[in-house]
Amino acid sequence: MEDTETISIHTLDATSNNYLCHFYLGNVSLARSDLEMAIYQFNAALKIRPNFTDAHYNLGNTYMSKKMIKEAIYHYLEALRIDPNNENVHNNLGIAFAYDNNLDKAITHFSKALKINPDHEKARINLSLVLQKNKK
Image (cartoon, rainbow, N blue to C red; front, top):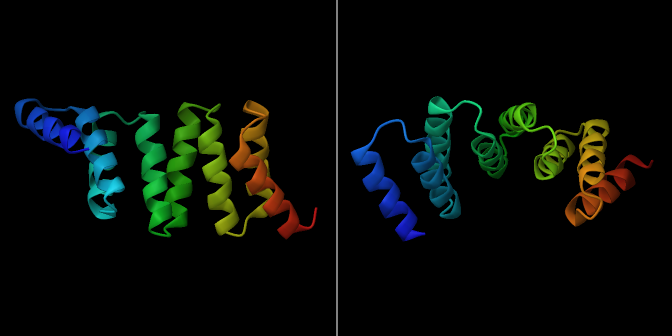
């Protein structure tokens, strides 16, 4: 992690518009639970490359960690706009909708994750929990 951070910082000093370095620094910050810096770095990556699926996804995860559900939903939806077949984004969007008490949308996204990958264990568990809660 420190090597990634050091290399990314040096690369940013030597180059401009390097979305990957911002992305890597966002990941390092997220791993350290420095959520504000993670948000800053992921947004910096997206400013350079707006259609960067992984930055939207990780920004969604960061906002979920901060319990900022609406912001998380926005970035998960952006990630799916770019890559509609991303099973992990569908799963995490389902979690966000469940937190937002929108169980029908949660069920839809867990189901989509499972359609893409029937062996997605987390999506299967999450779907089961939401169906229980929703009594369907």
